[in-house]
Image 1 (tube, one colour):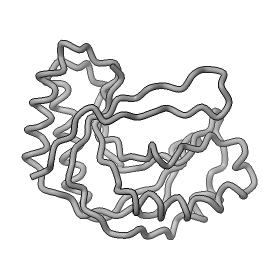
Image 2 (tube, helix red, strand yellow):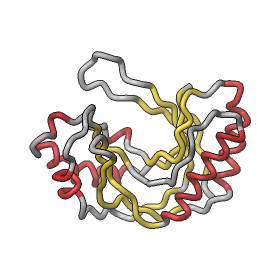
Image 3 (cartoon, helix red, strand yellow):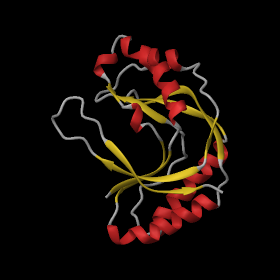
Length: 186
């Protein structure tokens, strides 16, 4: 099962960002990007990859402990950025230190449950909006969305999400995400 730990923004925050992102589709070069669907927008805390089912009970209990050790987070979607000309994203503002701590705890929980984890890097909270197969100049997009200040919301859950990859060769096909388990924060 292909899994990741995440914080999911509430529907009003997603709708607000969707309205702000819509004009970006008219910018030059937008048609070369693969835009993500709003219903899949999330803040990944830890990417676990393919997880053996026998590890799930221990993973669940460790993620539950991580969630309960972390207080609810006051957040908002904020600004924009890019990774190496290949990914356009919206950032976060608010309780970023506790969000980074939750990411650390999620990564450690997976590792301790026996999930082979990649080297852990400093967490950059981001919500992926679009990807490019080749490096692209994403500056017009980050400039257009850079001043975005979303509404305030409270992240009250840590979610374990299953990723169903899109079918190869089907134009416009998007990954589907399914929450497997969720634990309240605090």
